[in-house]
Length: 341
Image (cartoon, rainbow, N blue to C red):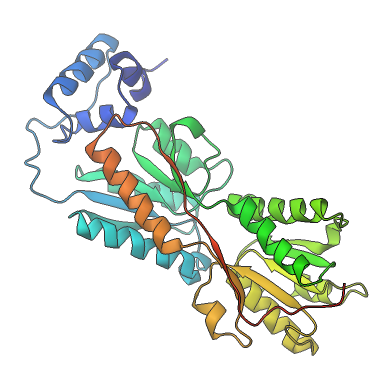
């Protein structure tokens, strides 16, 4: 079996990212650590392309920002734009350069990452999403590349630096808010549960129903493949039911706006006929009529924290993987009203 970068790291007693940076003769790694890593490489017979001379350290280091594979939807979601703004703001203050990595599918994103990695200035990556069984995470981890995840880690949990909200608690609180207004028929609409933020928000919604003694109606839980303003048929079916819900928790402002559009087409009024709580507190939540009550997940701060942790680990290579929870808050506007329970 071929020797891997992780075998070298284990023998040298350092992180895989330290081995990777040693192979590039990165100036952030001490001379003593480089010697220890190179001895382990020699002992195991691990071969890597190392530059003949050390980098001068004058060129700014590069951080890759990885968007989820998408042909369009990711570029329309203000969550990612705000997170990128936070990453860029922090990087600019620390004299790092950020670059966005995109692609229509996972193969294209992986190809783009492999191209970026060829630049010896690359210090690591920030992944703006989290989903189950992600081959991009597998690649970064197995190659010993430093990365920070925005979202909860499901792969290599103990070795992964991640920044997240408590999405389960947020989903629960959004549902409990509707319950406090007298709603008892509460639905949930979200993206596929392969996306961990939506899975956790849905779990919080379900937990709130269970704790309040409300039945969990499977027909009240809708998952859409992509976040889109064109999510119509499933929403129409939900709102056409004889026992249609009086309130909905939507996992994203985009889905909430789509719901508002369907209500308008069906002659339903918000909040008189349907109350909505959404997530992200984006521009969409403020330009709708009525304006949306929305959970602010502080996406800008998520980006700042992700960049801060990545740069901290670049400059201090043997730190343990950090897990940070950014608080959320409910911003109450006009899309919800009290009803008789």
